[in-house]
Length: 334
Image 1 (cartoon, rainbow, N blue to C red):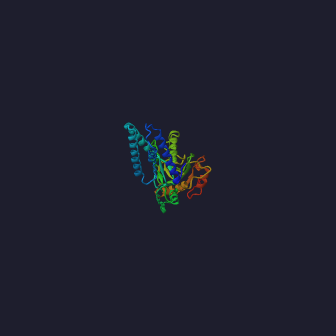
Image 2: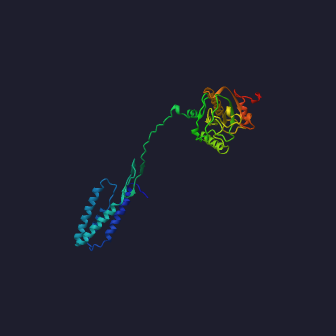
Image 3: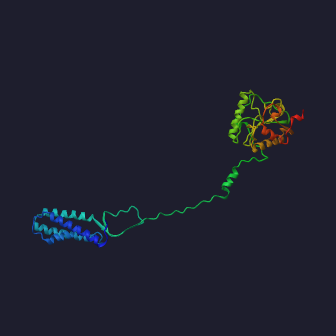
């Protein structure tokens, strides 16, 4: 337990004095001529107070006094070996005494890894002030006004302009070469047949390309046709995919192939319509065909179910096509 002030210091000095005197009395000096004053002088010289400001000077003085006392004892005893032994013992005693430290108030400020030695007694208060870590000032970076989330979302929204028609060429969806040379239509085509593929549909271009490859493989391997049946295919991603292309005779509608163009929507539209982008792309494709001379300006738009017994292009899509400008009722010709 720590003690404060002069009382603790006196207590420590008293212990050192008694320890030194007990040690001297325990030594066999072989002489009765050692007087009490010599013992007292030697014991007093062992008392060291490490809290004094003149600690080093005081310690040297005590050592000199101890040496003088030892010489007196040696002269009285008359044995140099005993004198040497006593001197070495006194040195060891002082070394052990010096290892016991008593300090006053302790204050450690703005330091790390402090070592204050072998301290036995601390008489005063202990105050440790931890060093403050330097604060780093961080500057917030404000986003640019044209890089906001709303602006990003607006830029990534998929929109097909009403006046543009994008056609994906055959090589882009990895089409096979036709089994035979193509046959061609004569002049601007008078009829356009709308169909559906009766397959899955997708708004992703990669999936639509895979579907078209499967359709071409089915038409060539299973149906025995020279190529994919349709001139163009419309995906729900809003893209037009090149099948046989402009001016080529297709295999989409028996009895109409030689003088019509076949456009098929990718999917099955019995209960739902293609996406608005898909419908818009089909209209733009027809307009493009007229502008480039592939279609007659007065072309007739018909559906697959009007030409043969089939559900193609699906009831929902058939209802939609009937609303378009160039839709034609075959029954009116009969």
